Image 1 (cartoon, helix red, strand yellow):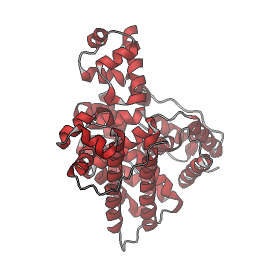
Image 2: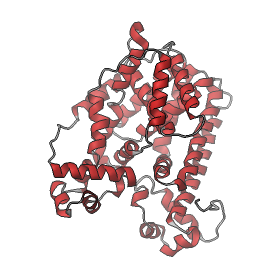
Image 3: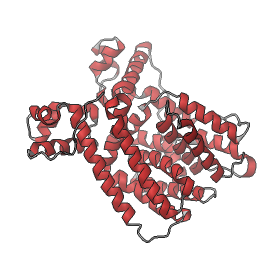
Image 4: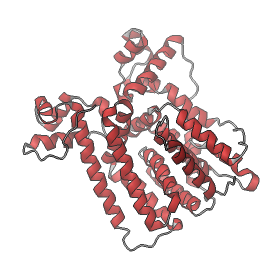
Length: 408
């Protein structure tokens, strides 16, 4: 069991708060895998021994930083809810608030947004951070619960919580600010329409972004056997230690090849990073660019059962989120970010169309919203052994399909 740490103590030594502040400000730029005792102590202007004196270990410093970020996020959320005082909202009026929260959280509160995502990545690799990951989840569940009462969302609150989880991750990606913001506002209007039991409106900004992302897809590449060996090793390393832990030497050791072999095929760090994401990229982007027609479910209830079983059977993985976070950090990966954000939802659109039938045509925005919802369900419930996980998951799916008038 992880050692409990008193994260709220008041230490008179200024190096204590400097160390926490330094780590909190580095979640955005570096991430856990690129923060070492030496780097942190140098940035904080203190000795490496101060970390062990105050926190006992680097991991406990990370825990203290996460706790500080949680407190700041809670305060920020309280301020947003206070702004709604006296407002009598409705599902139809929810769009503006949702778009504002997503944008403000991911842009004005960017270090906190990265801290939250880094906590999820760390929790996936170490039980030491799982309690704080649950605190982040509880924080947002409480926030949307309070907002729900203002906008009279009722049982739809869980739908909002899931879609926010995905959209706030994707809005961390920076492609073209004008297009990204306009597409976010379309997303918010689409969500508000769903909450009101109506189809999502047209989304010309998303359609434009999707077309641009399609044009930026790289040509298919052919790899030799050694290169595939390197790619597999790099992908395995991402699953274990995250993208930022990748180096030429570590990949060479994992692949069982020489450093020269890796360096010859992937001469720069950027080329190596691209290779590290090759398998993930192929699944998440190339597959989205060529969606397959899904088999129509026998009924909505069958669809719900099938999704619930697939989610609960799935092995928890954060490789795709790691890819998004890495692209959000690196301006050189803007095109990849656009593909990750705007090419998703094409297969989900076909699935949704098969559920709705010929009553109406499902548009691009609804496919993206459905994809966001399902992605968040996988993020929340994949591999869950909790007794009530299946019931929660199925309940959320039932609420969403009822809102869309899918029927039994």
